[in-house]
Picture 1 (cartoon, rainbow, N blue to C red):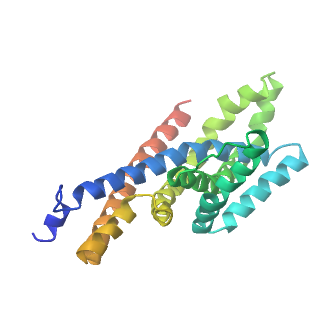
Picture 2 (cartoon, rainbow, N blue to C red):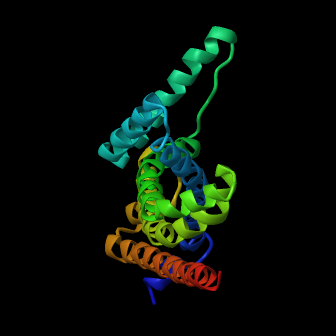
Picture 3 (cartoon, helix red, strand yellow):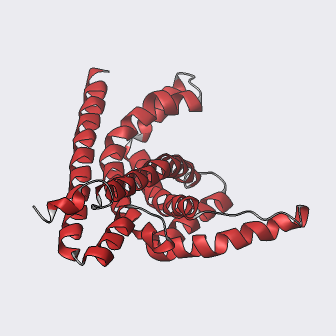
Length: 236
């Protein structure tokens, strides 16, 4: 009971701080996911471009951000991107300074990392669809855009969802790295609680349980999405 009292709300417990940290963690993951998802498809398409320069740029992007540790990417973006932005801005507006907060830096860094990983998912999913279907649809006079959205993309989802589901789980866990740049997420608040109460095992166990619950909920949602996509493809 004494340990559980540490999770109460108010001045005597850390429940409200941990809850705020959880909201920040979720906000970071939810903000990053759609950005990384869209960029994954753009880079994935670039890898199939007829332009050799575009293809090389896309593969170079993927290679760089797949090789760099996530923590190093976060630190580079947080400490260097703001300086780089201001360097270019000063050419046009010498008196202007742009401030990039830690949360935005975290979103940018994680987006770069997970779009690089996601682009490989898109590339492999695209290659898994039989090219004969594209040729058959083209022979009927359908435009490339219509062929992609009506024929290719629905079949790609079957391969994309499990892989993107795994990337989402990795993204949830990697949000804990953002605490190193002073974002008040779940891990940062738990470290503050530990520094005050000297109860590391208890608070780290609570954080671990929260991440396990988030993963279980995410896995359940992924199963529903997979089932719906499979039913759609089998019924079409």
